[in-house]
Image 1: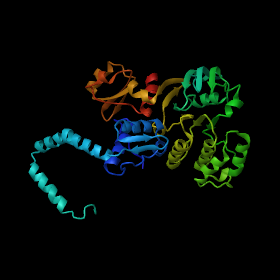
Image 2: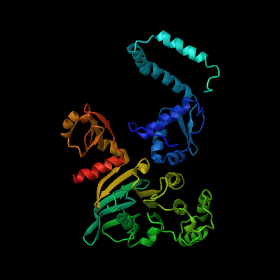
Image 3: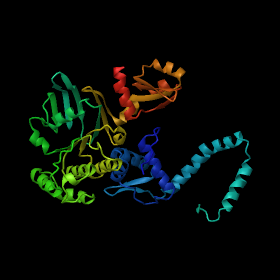
Image 4: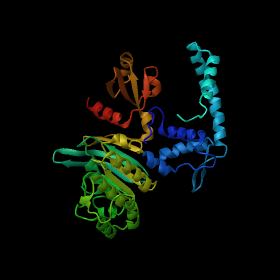
Length: 129
Length: 285
């Protein structure tokens, strides 16, 4: 149950990333309430200020809005926005590295893509394994 | 603004032994301060002085009161869980609630009962019939039901199993803590509370060797994981402590910027346990 915190990143940042992942995966949808600061602090035994700081990052990014006295909510269109940003980031940052790895290992991009589509079609049920 | 707890040159001697030796610090409202130190460092003596359970030299103000002379007023707004079980073993849970209700103005019996309803503790049970973990739960439930400004915990989870320990801190945050409240806590289980703290103090041989906010630690302290060759270079910057890990050297620096160490190896912020060893052992080396 206990999350493993990564030593290289501040915890508030990792909390922010976790909420972002939840929005991307659709666990948290537009307008959904975030778990309360108190709950998260108690669950993970974190200082409430740490949790608040993580949430504040999300507010600053426009992904979450504070409603006075009611808590924090995912803003409308947050997932769309995140997907756009994530795609952008993948294309700019990760993809060039993937390409470099493919080159370095002497792989053929066409071959890899063909294998990927074979794998996809051979698993008709999807997630049964 | 005056601090919630303010100590100036506080000292307590037992014969020739200086249990607390010229200690000064401040604790502000809304903080969770960890007091970390080895056995015999003076933690409990210091807490006792804050609670007015022992007199001391120097000046000490808690909630604006002199804890030794104005103990009665202070006790209205302060709570304490000791490392030794202090609840009488013969008393029943409901009798204990009757008692606290009668003696404490700020106690909400309803709240204590609600909290206990979430545990396996039966109102008719005697303290001696409860497990060690349940006694701590009972104690915490009572304390949480008291509207106190300052809570002092002295090794509150000593001897408890891991489930109880986690629940203890979870409940503390969920049911007790808010920005109007302040907690001072001592423990050996540093890893368990380090993410909980806003501030940390290290105490060794009766003296405070570190007093910092958790936010400030990454700026003040850095650990370098370096090869032996790079370690020679890094030693010129006077590390406070050095240890070996998997054939590499880990050097702990105080007041050295990360820029000064770039290129010499991997940099990270030491965790509290490592920092404690560095400060205490480094000082005696």
